[in-house]
Image (cartoon, rainbow, N blue to C red):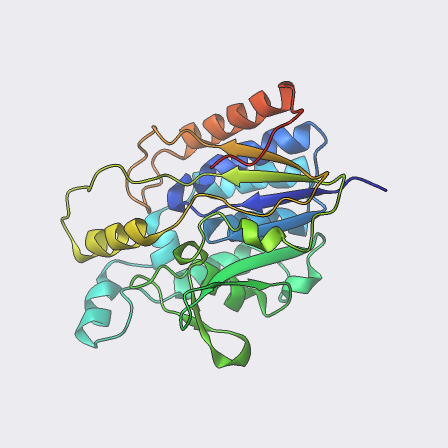
Amino acid sequence: MTRRDIFVLSGGGSRGAGQVGMLRALLAAGVVPDQVVAGSVGSLNGCYLAADPTPAQVERLAGVWASMRASTLTGPRRSMVANLATMRPYLFSNRALRELIARLVPSHRLEDLAVPVRIATTDLLTGLPAHHDTGYLPDVLCASAALPGLLPPVRLRGGRAHVDAGVAENVPVSGVEGLAAPGDRVWILDVTKCPRELRRLRTPVDVVVAALAGSITNRPTMAVPAGVEVVHLKLDERYDCGPVFDFSHTATLIEMGEQTAAQALTADRGGLSLAG
């Protein structure tokens, strides 16, 4: 049997830049995904890579991150006032996010990507994780990154509303179930951060983000089949890179992610298991 490599990309807001560095080190070492499972910002990174799983594509992704700003995802701040005044259930529309997706990923259907991708969302009715192997890619990606209160829920299959994957599971390892088989390797590209103290709350956005961060579960848990190797690449939680939409630390995060993956690649991976 041929060993398969499965990449699991977590959420993490602007810390998603760390996954670019991890991907750079992995692909440079010849580790190429046969399957991607991703949620939230990781779904954007994962689909971009899945369209062309090469080191050159990772470098193009690094360029995308270098130009990322809060407005790249939310649009102009002035739209927040209008959305509040008209009592819409979100502060920002997903128009800017859809424009970013259109630039990043050429495929319209999730199932048309070169590498199979399973995208995680949260079913707003049940609060449970949902996983998507097919569907209209812009809708699925917008749902996976729809931070409640900030971006609008997206109705997917069956007309049910879905929001950010991180509400149910910020490291979407439950999506690996049914995919991994004995001999496979699961690489968890984890850029989440556990909040240790409440930041100064200056705006309604700060309150929404703080409430969401407090509700997120980001400890990966999964039933690992016998014979499956799990490598947990964890970005240093101690590094403070600011709010979820602060992209001023991108270069540092990419470097940190690359170092994290490089250390795992050079270490003896025998007996590695999923860390909590």
